[in-house]
Structure formats: structure tokens, C-alpha cells
Image (tube, rainbow, N blue to C red; front, side, top):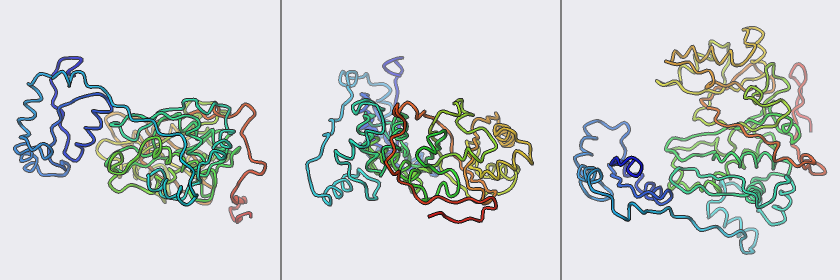
Length: 423
């Protein structure tokens, strides 16, 4: 405002985030005159807030009122006008040789993991992972930061391969990892609220790499779902520079961050067009769709009216976004018994039913996931914010499989749903 329009500004941020603002100014090259009232300001009586303004800035010790007046009236200094962004030094490509135990300790102590054991990214393992794409190791993939106040860090195909190895992936999974990297979106944004994320894979790649969209799709019963979901977390840590208290401030956090609700859509048993087709892609294209929200409510059962009751209860005063994960049995009932030939018809009914000032069906999505064991749906307040195409990262010769691809036991589904697990 000051540089472009000559309008004096006096930014105010609570004292809890004073160090954030300092790093933000350094990263973006802005020397702003912040005033820092005490923290917190949410759910605090008005009388307390008035006392904040009458008192002193707990960071500088100066009068808050005087700081704001000075920020608005005192001309900018030459230092403030010519302030430049600070670039962080590039990290070394390789670590010094060490024992396996010490390297595991090093990764853990430096916060390069999610707290669980990793596969050490040796040069040989990374080179093998790179066979999962035709793209050059030094090709730029994207930039990421879990917070807006830090410099967005660049990463290459090789760095994505390092993370894929750490997560336990195989080369067949690598195109999906690269599509995630291309999005530039961390799975854990910096916020005092505890965000969760979800990714849904559509298209032929689902079956090529053995992903699960059926029985137990969101449970730890599938190798591809597990390692791909984990890789997004490790990207957020290593590329997004996630550091608790410094760049990541989720009050309680969520266990969803470990795997980010990663699964495929059950296209084969769905009565509707796949999710990615409804978003403008062709059935033969492979995509990964990204979602973000807070809450996941399970054990939903009943018709569309019941779905509306649930989202009304959690929508809040401004409405919100929702994504329903519906078992194929639910989708069949909604279509055959209630007449929702297209999921968008259902989205419109739910959006109109919220009685908001403006109905927005695009903010309510439906994805078919499940093994037809029970006509249940999962309600989330997740919004869909991006879909990335996977195909450009797949080698021209096709997905690079191991001679014997790694697969966990698959569920054997009978028509009556009574079969068990095939070993």
C-alpha cells in the first residue's frame, strides 16, 4: 500500500507471531512497522482487548497507541525503502558416509521425517527410483512452503525421488509422487487450526500400481495407498520446511497428517462418472485430486435428507465445503431410489438445503469409495482445491514395475460380500 499507492499502513499482529513477521519481512523483502498486542485475542472479553490497546507492546515495551501513530505518520527511512529479501543457503546434495543407525538418528534429530522409520535414501536407491520417470533428475518440479512467511523452496525430480525412497515407495509409484510435487501444495499448511488433507487418485494408474478404492480403502491394508500418502507428508516436511512452532502451529494436529487419507476412487463399482471426469478430465487420463479441511465424521447412513441434516449441523454460520465419501451401495441407492442421476444433482440439493445467501453446489463433492459391505457414507468438511495430471510423469514405455510387484493381500469380494481375505 505504501510503495504502490502512498497510503500509510500500520500492520498489527499478536505478539505470539512476532518472530513469524520478522521472518516474513526477511523472506519477502518488506520492512513493515508491526505493532504486537498481547496474545490471544480470540474468545477474549472486549474489556481485556481495550486494556491491550491502552497498554504496551510486549515485544518492544512501547505504547501500542504510540507505535500505531508513528507507523502511520513517520516517513519511511532509506533502509525501509530499500529492504531486500534474504535467500537461504542451498543444502548439500549428499551427506557424509555414516552407519545406518547413525543416519537414521540424524534424519530423526533434524526433523527430516514424520517420526516413523524411513528407508534411507542412498544413491543407489534414489537412482532406482528415478527409473520411474523419463524426466531428468535436475528438472525443476515445483516450489513449496508450509507457511506464507518463509521463502518457497525449489525441488527437483531427484529430490522428489529422495522423498519417495524415504516413504517406502517403488518406481511404479513415482509418477504420482511427481504430480503431487508439481502441485506445490503442502499437506500441512501452517495454521493454528489443525488442517487435514486427502488425495483421491483416478484413472488407469490406480490399477497399474495396485491402489485400493474398495474394501478398507482408508485403512492400512494397501501398500500403494500407504506409501504415496506418506510421501506427501514427507514432502511437506522436507520441501515445505515444516518445523513445529516455527512454521507449523497446529494446536492439536491430527493423525490424518501421517497418510493424508490417500486412496483411489472405486470407479468400477460406481454408478456415476468418475470424480476426475466430472472435473473436466477424460476417463483414460490419470489424476490425483487434493482436498483440505478439518473434520471427518464416520458412520453416516441414510438418504440424502440425512446427509443434509449432518452438514447443517457442522456447517457453521458461513456454510462451508463438504466432500462425501460414499460406498458404492450408497451411490446406487441415491441414483436408483432417489433419482440423483448425476452427483451434481445431489450437490445442488445439499447446497440449496443449507439456506445460504448464495447456493454453490461446486463446494460439495461426492467420491465413491468402499467395498459394498454397508451402505454408509463418510462426511468431511474438506474442499477440493486442485487436480493434477499424472500421465506427463509416466515413462513413454509405461509404468516401471518390479519383476514381481509388491502387493499386500487383496480382499476377495463375493456377490454377497461374505468372502474373506486371499493370501
